[in-house]
Length: 124
Image 1 (tube, rainbow, N blue to C red):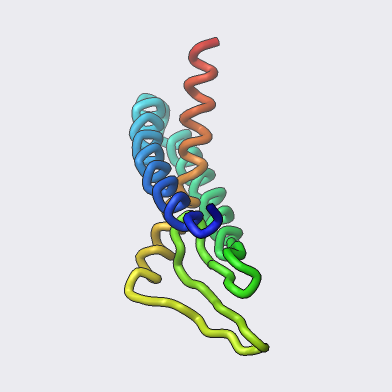
Image 2 (cartoon, rainbow, N blue to C red):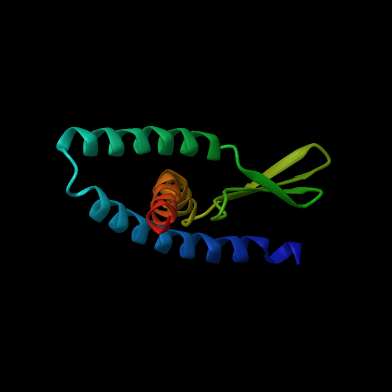
């Protein structure tokens, strides 16, 4: 089960990116009629929170085995295998796209939170 974690997290990341695109559209519609200064404050504050989340996400890692550490959530961007004090890193052509994908997922996460909160507020 643990070996399939990168695949499961990758699928979850793609689904989350789709939800985040929906959230951006929903938030644009919700804030479209607001004054320009209010829209600017909204987008600026969400960007600052997104940048903070992105910085924190740079340290995301988990162990698949006692000697194998994986970096990048939800998309696997690198792996380090350590044996007898020597570590080998495994990177490849998907390292940079995975890194960018991880940053995008985490940066846009506040959009989902706001869109969800606005739906809850509208229902009440």
